[in-house]
Every structure is written in C-alpha cells, then in structure tokens.
Image 1 (cartoon, protein in one colour):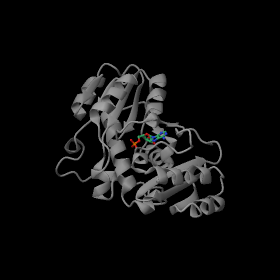
Image 2: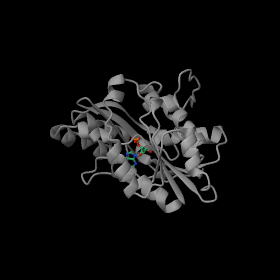
Image 3: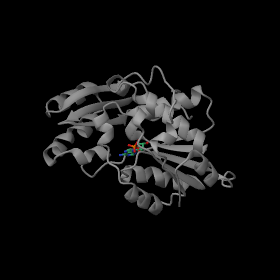
Image 4: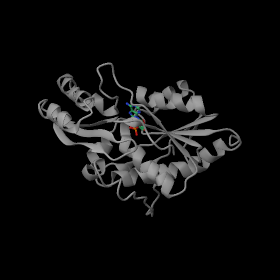
Length: 260
Ligand code: AMP
C-alpha cells in the first residue's frame, strides 16, 4: 500500500493503473465499519482502490469541532491495508489549501438547506475538497455513504453541473445492532446519552416527519430539524443534539428513480 502526501505523489502512484477502474473512497479517518463497507464496495468494483484521509478544515464551522476531531493515522492506515486499499492519499492541510488559496465550489440551493442551514459553509467546504480530490485522483467511481444523504445530493448536483466524468456510488448506512448509525461522533456519547440517542433511528423508521418529531421531543433530545428532504429519493432526514453531541441520520422513503 502506497501512502501519498502530495497531489504529485498520488498521481505518480496511479500512473500505469489507468487501464483499469480507479475507485476513490474519501474519508476523514477515525475509520469504523461504515467506512469499511465503502472500502469493501470499492474493492469489489474497482481494479485500484484509493482512500483519501483528510480532516478537511474547510467543512468545519466551530474550531473546537475541528480540533476535537478524532485522529489516529497509524490505526487508520492499518485498517486501510487490511481492507485491501492500494493507495492512501493523506495530504497535510497546506497541500490542499496553500497560502493564497481562494477558489470555492458552492452548490447554491441544495447546499443551503437542512444541514447547510445549521452549518453555514459546510457544503462549500465539502464540495470544494471533493472536487479537488477528484482532480487529484481522477477516479472512475467515488464511494459515499447514505449516512450523509445531503452530501450525496450536493455532490450529484456538482457532478452533473460541472460535467464531471465519474460515477457516484452510494453505500447503505451501517448501523450498530441497536440501530444507531455508526459515526465517529458516537464515541463522545455517555452510556446514558447513547441510550437516549436510540430514539433517532426509532423516530426515522416511522417514515413520517410529525411522528418522528413527537418521538424525538418526548425522548429529551434537542431537534435541529426533522424533515422530508427533496433528494432523489425523498429522504426523511434529521439532525439532533444529545447533550453536546450532534448526530445526523436519515432513511430514504422510496427507491431511487434516476441513475447518475
Ligand atoms: P467521514 O469520514 O465521516 O467524512 O465519512 C466518510 C464516508 O463514510 C462518507 O461518505 C460517509 O457518508 C461514510 N459513512 C460514515 N458513516 C457511515 C455509516 N454509518 N454507514 C455508511 N457510510 C458511512
């Protein structure tokens, strides 16, 4: 497994591998079984699997959230190796955003609702870093989790609007046995908070925004939003705070209509 720190190095690592399919799995590390499902899907469909490992400062609002993000590169590299990754692209922040950096991708409408409304600038950071990763790696396929449904909707829009030649592959949300969607943020929940957080998947499983809100309200969870999002397919999505931990989750309400 090659570990590349610069765009030039990741391009060099992929030289000679362009005859086969190249798959990209973007991550911010702190790998869990959700990330491993993406890597497994990529391994199955692609000749070369590239995983990016980059905690993207541009998509964080509060500095405390960025600084407190869990980082354990050695453990992540070991997990990537075990998952059969060929190339890890793990650049320092200055490689992605050197001094003088000033170009941003803004998916104006889809990026401004729901998560975008509560996390101003988040999707600008996501879309920008993903386009930069696509340009560095030039993947045929890029793998994303349904867990971040709005991220998928925003990136599909960007791929269509900017005529990018790649296919986005969406992998179903991986959950713990109790129903809670896996997230690196779950580690911040106390046992009592975690028990309370189980109301989130339970509420979304009803498929109905009013019922879902009633369940969340009666569980002592602060609701930021719970709504049917106008994605393809329509998706019941929610963001909540359990104590100081922010959690998001969603369930698609029907099968997807369009293939991108
Ligand atoms: P992150 O490292 O949080 O940026 O996530 C990297 C990728 O893993 C994103 O495409 C996420 O949607 C995906 N992901 C995170 N958690 C899960 C999960 N529980 N199930 C499936 N995919 C996930």
